[in-house]
Image (cartoon, rainbow over all chains, first blue to last red):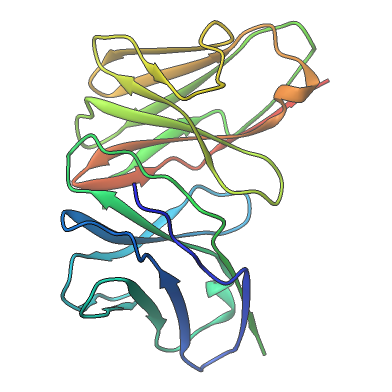
Length: 111
Length: 112
């Protein structure tokens, strides 16, 4: 699996958009970009994933650059409950492919 | 989304005893499950891939005789930490594939 690079921490004011960047310059053509988050002492929670088109769901939006070497997860209106560690992961489309976690970004949402 | 249930959520045991952690896929069948461990303030580290009906595949550096994995059915995988020691104290998390990876809620193991 390709490696990813994320900033170790970010702050965001409640109600504002949180934009979390991720670099994955060695991503290959059959690898998706996945985003998970982990709230303290819980299992990771799936947020969103994409291959090359931008994606949006009820939780977030995912913007992938045209060359697919980086992406940005957008939480449009961050709340205190969005405080968590956010992991950007690239994963092969093979059904048994494992997820290899990097160090993630610790997002702190403040009042 | 799909639900992965992990039990127990926390366990305290004496050094030298064995502890079993269960991971169940509640509403789907999972031929493959993954086991991770996580130390405080660190990321998740993959320990092994559990395959239904066959032997697990362990990551480099993970002792297969210490961390026994059994995946006897399509909805259940178990991880047994044998002869646990204080350095095995950690947060253990399982996951299963159902189009994407879903995770259990984790098990906090404390070995005294």
